[in-house]
View (tube, rainbow, N blue to C red):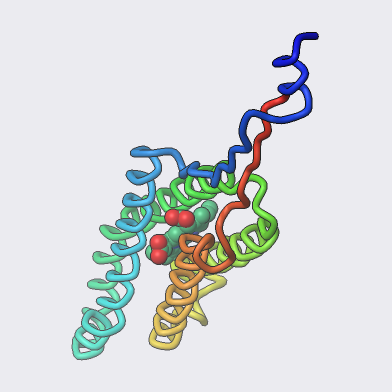
Length: 184
Ligand code: HEM
C-alpha cells in the first residue's frame, strides 16, 4: 500500500450529512390529496346544507308531501354520497401509502400509525351514520337533526386528524439526518 492509500484507509475523505429530502411522491401525491379534500368538502357541504337549509325547509312542507319530496331528493343524491365515500377511502389509502414511504425511518412513525388508525375508524363511523342503511336505522333517522349535527362534529375531528397527519413532520420533528462516510 502506498502513502496515499494508507491515509485514505484511516481517514474518510468527507463526512456527508444528508437531511432527507424525500417527499410524498411528487405530482401524483398532490393530485390525490386534492381529490381527497374535494370529496371531503362536497360531503361536509352537503351535510351542512341538509342541516341548515333542507331540513328546516322540509319541516315547513305539508307532512304528506314531505316524505315524497325526501324520497325524490335521497334517490338523486345517494349515488353522489356513495361515490364520495368510495373516493375518500381510495384516495385516503393512497395518501397514507405515499406518506408512509416518505416517513420510513422516522422515530415517531408509531404516532403516525396511531393517528391514522383513529382517523380511519372515525371515517368508517361517519360513513355508516351518513348512509344509515336499511330499516333498522329508521329510529335514528327520526332524529335527523341530532345525527346531522353529530356528523359535522365528527367531520371536524376527522379534518383535525388529517391536519395532524399532514403536518406530522412539523409536529413530531423532521426526518432524522442520514450520515454517510465513504469507506476508504
Ligand atoms: C369522512 C371522511 C374523510 C374526511 C372528511 C377527510 C378529510 C381529510 C382532509 C380535509 C385532509 C387534509 C388535511 C390537511 O391537509 O390539513 C385529510 C387528510 C388525510 N386523510 Fe382524510 N378524510 C376522510 C377519510 C379518510 C379515509 C377513509 C382515509 C384513509 C383510508 C383518509 C386518509 C387521510 C390521510 C392519510 C391524510 C393525510 C394526507 C397528507 O398527509 O397530506 N381520510 N383528510
